[in-house]
Amino acid sequence: MKIAWGISWNDSKKGRMVSAMMAMLVAFSVVASPAATSSLSADAEEMVSVIVREVAGSGNASEKLVVELGGTVGRDLSIIDGFVAEIPARQLVRLEQSAVVHSVTYDSKIQMLHTVNGFNADVDMGSAHNLASQTKAKDLWASGITGRGVDVALIDSGVAPVTGLTGPNKVVNGADLSFEQGADNLRYLDAYGHGTHMAGLIAGKDPDWSPANHDAFSGIAPDARIVNVKVANAMGASDVSQVIAAIDWVVQHKNDNGLNIRVLNLSFGTDGVQQYTLDPLTYAAEVAWRSGIVVVVAAGNSQFGNQRLNNPAYDPFLIAVGADDTQDRNGYGDDTVPAWSASNAGRTVDLVAPGKSLVSLRSPGSHIDQTQPQGIVNSRFMRGSGTSQAAAVVSGGAALLLQHRPTLTPDQVKSVLKRSAVHLSSAGLDAQGNGGLNLRDAANTTPALTAQLHTPATGTGSLDAARGSARVVDPDGVTLSGEQDIFGQAWDPATWSAASLLGNSWSGGTWNGNSWSGNSWSGNSWSGNSWSGNSWSGNSWSGNSWSGNSWSGNSWSGNSWSGNSWSGNSWSGNSWSGNSWSGNSWSGNSWS
Image (tube, rainbow, N blue to C red):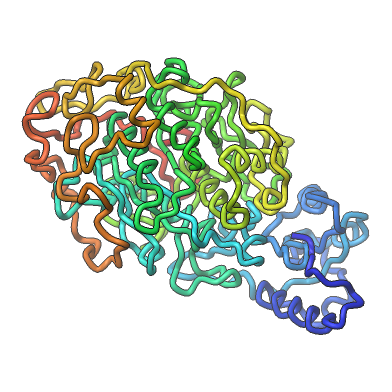
């Protein structure tokens, strides 16, 4: 953010403005004494930490110069139009004399000493603190734009009530449509670990968070609210019919009981390839879009062996998000798009957002926690990479934009995100779309004057084709296939698509002719306002409690496609999972 206080230098409030600016500067960094800043000469072998202030309108030129001179770019200091950097002392004069640099001053080394719970948010480029700097979310926070009043529906594996997600009115439970909804110790909760990570990136918020406290964790939209709609179990298992039912639930109940669902995050995808105009999954997402909900979808991580965008990301109406690799530096000057982030010359991603080695909240004892210990950062955090994370970042950004400009339509939100994106010089257009997420500029960008003119979907295609190769298998080894949902109920696309568009596909707790809600949702309204986390200690699942016996089958028996229960052991995992959790870097086997 350029310094724009709404007053001129001749304003009578000038003295107070300068004092406020200096107070905020001190909050970001401790500046050395005048004696230290009077001369910038030092030993040629020494790396020094400096604060670089940019010339207004110079873009990322000063960041690029620092890199060219052998330095590294650190934390963004948008309040003074600058950033922290480390640079060889012998290059200081060249940096200071550059036409794109306003000033260079020494920065105290004390700024590098922030370590909380074994994690230093200052120096880790995957931290929430640096993520907010990279995307310019911090500039919006400084103006009071934090996502307040906007609800983000998260259709995923549930949410664990860990610190950062247990604040007042932070998470609201919607419907639990997973195979675990009948288990008291698992209902709504995240025994897989994916949903909690996404929720943290979107709207996590520590009790002591403030824009100036970079040691406290927060998501991109710290005052937005998560509506938790669970569809995946402890193994990550979910059928397309469950996801479609969940999208319909979100649309039909987006304004129930004080809800204000304006954003839907789908960090999910299959390799179904039927035309989007026919596919029922893309149609359900389009219905949400037409109802005024911004639908943000992970592009995919080549987990199906090709670079095509996953279903439903290939629907051109939606916001398809690819991953950006920041190269461990702030700013987009040298960023690339990882090879595993889906890219396609036909339906490209719309934009990219940071998606490599992002640090977010863990669900302790969950499946990912146990099977991917290399991703564990400390007692609170897990590191993960993928277009899932990138989509969550954009969902949080959409919440900020909708608080700032609540009258924006989904088409307009997509337009301003694309128009304001920063081009990545080191990535092809197919991979990056319009470029990297830039929330500061998006907040003030004029949207396109016309709505999107793609051909609308009809939803009259094959449910089975929407699954692609992602299938669930019952204990007898029978794969769910054909035109039937998880209960074995026949799929009638014409009847469903008409009801979905009218917003009445759900009748109480019944969808597609069967009761899906069990005891987890009362039918006409969601079961509660929020939860505090007191009902879950972190020890509710040991790994054995959800090994396949945690779902009794009683709520579903007699209606499943084969047998009376479901184990989940044969699930392929491609739609959500993979070996994507790493403590350091990424091999490319990411999850979407």
